[in-house]
Length: 98
Image (cartoon, rainbow, N blue to C red; front, side, top):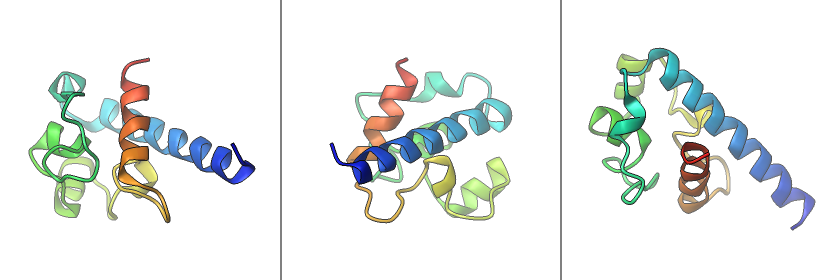
């Protein structure tokens, strides 16, 4: 693994942790139980974390349900520059199964 890959992994894990903390604080009670890890796919608006929890991903959903004013990249809800959706999906699965 290169330094660049390790750095990207580190930041991805931090973003996902921030997303978990945000959902723990402002999401619906039992939000984790709404996520089916076998269908979780951050590249699909209906099967991403926000899709599982609120029905469908959209910037409007993030604003209305969680008070965010962007696409949620900083919370692991959307990919960052050069990041693949499968990488972000795997990070969420890892975090939710720890």
